[in-house]
Length: 322
Image (cartoon, rainbow, N blue to C red; front, side, top):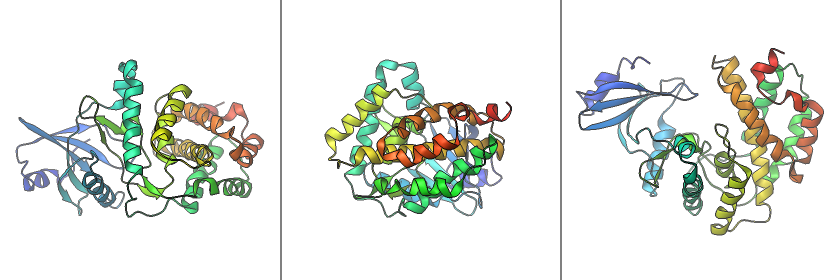
């Protein structure tokens, strides 16, 4: 976690000449994060090195979110040639660790996260590319591209694609909203006693409102109970008029997202040398199995039942060594 060569000059150009640069835990991408620290203030330095990363989608969404009253980090400076961005520092207190340490706050904090989505979904969607059928297919295919080969299964790709194609209409109907796409407890920062700040929204698209609900309530990184999931869905529906097909869309997108994540976590292990991610897959499979029980998923469930036995739905690293 050595700071990029251009960091010192970039900080100086933005008025942070005397800042110490301290590494901050990164994520699953090529992006790295540092904290610029001075005696009376701090900021976050994002290193999004080209050509692997492009910070412009993040910058555009951050400005759209703050312009619409949401708590995204303010932008203090940017250098697109070097992929450097200086951001408002939201601190280190994430919703995830707060809920784990104080279970009595779980419902209140999840309700606060749902309230953000309620507010987001009452606004016209940002000018974004659509979360359409081609994107849904491409993401679902990550399971057959990475997970199936890792555990020794030769999948029928044509049948897999056809099964998904038969159910995606549920997720493509109705008005589109801004979909942040990675909306979960590790990307929500406590910036006040009950105020949540938003991170990791650079991949936003315009799509179905159920997607970010799935991202939050079927969290790949922490267990969310079925009771909390049901309570938060009821909280959302009490504030937002949903159509009769909403539940089907929720489970279709849940299954699609969880299939994608199983593939991504396998890829992070095999391609990127990050072996902690496969250990998260059993949780994701539990969510996926639950989603597949919805009647709208019948064609997809039939493919999974014929192709991946329950005993092979788990940690791909562990299963590959059996």
